[in-house]
Image 1 (cartoon, rainbow over the protein chains, first blue to last red):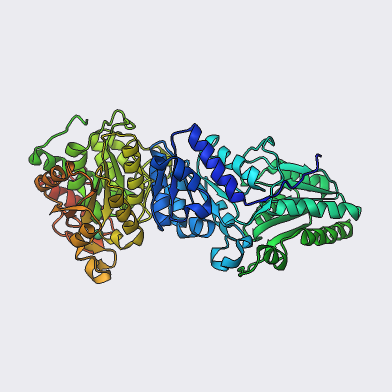
Image 2 (cartoon, chains in turn red, cyan):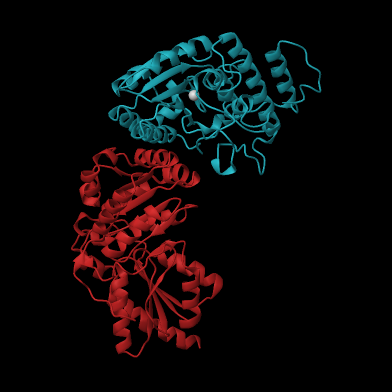
Length: 322
Length: 290
Ligand SMILES: [Mg+2]
């Protein structure tokens, strides 16, 4: 494995904005829908470049989702983005019936994912968006690991996919470490580090933390596999079940509630096909709060050191289980 | 164009009666569903599909067709009966309403493949937003077709309707025409008792819409209203169509208890006889003939 190097911190939302702009240049059917906060979710670039294909609908998420459905039924490729909390929950019924039941190609960008939104506090920290999106039939859920990959994921969702897609990204500048040449395929998890004692299945900002934790575990003689699970639905059954079989233990890591999130999704799959001991890094049935992004990640245990601790505990459990 | 396209109110009335009969028969056989609203809207649907809409039952996806969005999915029986009478699918298929494996879902579902159906809908307050999206797409592509959307009056209590109303006027969607089924009732009783909607005309006007009112059970008046709004430039239009729930069957007209009810076979026999104005044999009226 080529070791990953942080080229510098960058918010993943910039990748979304860049991907949308590039898709818009290539395909005139791409339409962006804004609900007032276009600059803070990264679609202002598109809006400035293609004013005719940018539709301002104001602070009215339910209408935004319905309009996106109508556009998609007419063959357009609508991309709607606002904060993840509002994009998913305020318009949940519209997403369920108008978007998912009609099975239209609508791309929903959920910005400000996780506690790393920081000082804005609990109301604006999307921590249940994956859960509510992944139970919707026909919906796909993406959670790319850095800005570079968010751009690739955005392009893939717009250009090489059908049906509803939810893609989440964050505001805080975080390590940008993947290459744009790294192929991105929706539904195909990426093996970022080989290992045989346990697997860390991580998503979003926690992938970088997982890589650091794996390094630390290695220093303690534990070989950890790292999977970048950028697609939570459809979950890569082949990669997850193989990880369970070959490493016999799995830690999930996400900036989201464990219940219903990546943790829940992996546990459902592993329990069905190859039960192994698991640990879960993520939010545990709590709201976030105001604070510095890094301090919040620390407080709620969504860090490399927490993954490391879970790794030690997991290896213990594995040995006890024989 | 449908083969039976006409501007003659008398002919439209005859078609509406046939559609009402099909609604009663299919709902009786289904054993559940919404009779009142479906009968009340039979004239609106008839005027749309047999006079106003540019559409082609032989080519349901014709790009230049006018689109009809039914937001109140619970009156699906009148949509299905109208589509069948217009020639989108055989009348006999109306027997399958609400049954397992049917293309005629209790509330419309596109994934079941019914020709002529534009939208899966039934959760109130969503249809207008989808219609707005379709109208914006039509404008972007400089197309001439129109988007019609049928909303219930009780549905107007959903806040999302007004988000869409605001957006349609803001974006000057003169290719969008809404029909509000103003029957004045909803499941719990009169709309004005459950949650006041009046002054309804003023509400739409203040949102920037062209408003026309008419008797929604009068095909002549409906034709006139659609004519009036056809050439409106720069803003969307709404036709507030005053209808009577259960229209056509004297004993249930205006009675909100018939919102979500269906007749038993004996009642159906009576209803069909009333619509025909003639005696029918027991067999004909058994609810098994469409
Ligand atoms: Mg009503």
